[in-house]
Length: 64
Image (cartoon, rainbow, N blue to C red; front, side):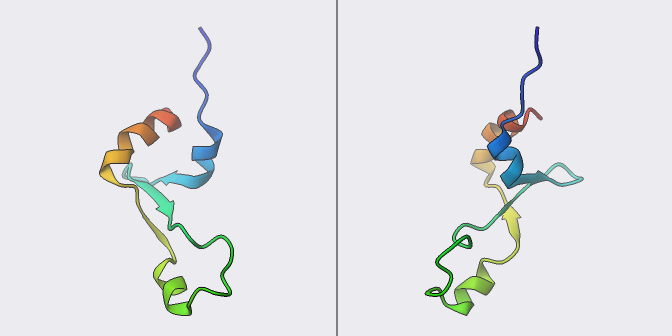
């Protein structure tokens, strides 16, 4: 039986840390940045943990 493939959209967006936590970028930083305040931009910098409710579904997409 063939192996299951990792969901390629998910693997581009979510990283797994060494301890196994799932990290993601904040939403709202991709485009239309001119009209957003620099205060908002700073707040959206960096990564954050995936919510606990979504973790199980995302792990399934990543095949972990």
